[in-house]
Image (cartoon, rainbow, N blue to C red; front, side, top):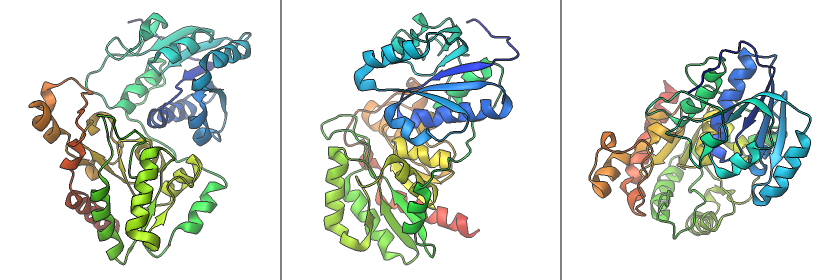
Length: 357
């Protein structure tokens, strides 16, 4: 691996197109650089959906890529960057799409992941790589890009986004006399996917029944417009009618983020909203069985996570966490059923007790 001893970098290009959670992790890198190297100009090459959330970041130039029309985006970026020279490209997206886009970016140094994490031949498109550190959380791994250019930081941290006017929208919906529990019930994957990270609808019904029977909790549902989310929304409407505020499919990504920011807690499986909770400073009760939360869970909510990943490894693969590769996924549709409603209720009670203290 080549190392970088450059003391000052004037113009940085950061390439992270998606996904939402990974862009939330990338935000920690950007905010660290902005704080410790304020003279450095940052250009972020980002996907359309993700740009909607981050577009108001101060002093960041955005170049927006349509991943559904990648070749046109490549031509657009090549034209945009034809006369622009960057000191360094931080290619934080190990994918062939990002590799293609990186060809249109003129940079003296092109930094990618280490050999173990450089998927899709990424190291063919870079001339430097970050340090190889085993068993890191994804957010810590991304922070190695900042360390590589000598903008040092030991732990990722985030300054909450300001969302105008979406925060006014959120505040009007939140009951100030109750704890607000936002539930983003599912990842947006289809039902027939073996890697189905959503908790079952019956478990959510049991949990929400408990929540609405408490007098101190307001329940708000949020989510997107995927078939999975639409199905969950319809079933929860049937079960609870107007006793919950169901906003699934009814908000923009920014409105959803504002609701999460102003809530007291978020319940979510391994999906983008869980990481929005992290960057907004909201405690996240993460529901994890199919992925390792030590690698990709909500970074600042470790003690609130319901972690059934070790149990799932033992049940489905007959292995322990230390016996499998870092990032091993459980591709069994029933794995999420290892999480019970009582597991989640216990975390909710502990979190509310923490508020009282």
